[in-house]
Length: 157
Image (cartoon, rainbow, N blue to C red; front, side, top):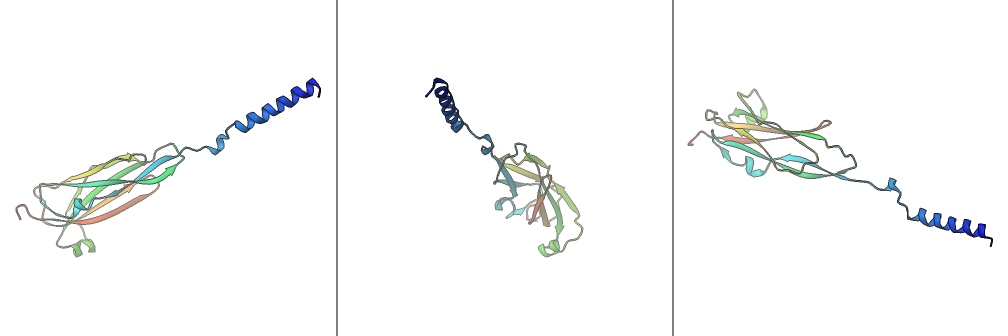
């Protein structure tokens, strides 16, 4: 074997070895954890409320998979109380509520694994009855909503 052929063969083996050790960056991916929110804890609504109290609705964050997109998506969490209605059936039948109270919207992102709570102060003059508590989680491209019924009894009753 000539010296030139030996050098060429050695260079070719070295190049082959180096190429086998290189990493194909197209196969690497970074995943960013996403979260979604649901409302509310059962204890938030399964009791009778009294005017003057603050209705607190706890938002529950839940993993929603991963994404390769590094930019976080904005999420707005809202809660609105409407009523009163004489009973749950009248509430479900609809009609115009006399009272509408809204919590301050919570703005977060789909990357935040956080505890959040919406607060609605119940005025001392709030009439007794049944109230609809509507909640929503709004993203740029979609919206999820739900509702539950709470009962407000007169103060001292």
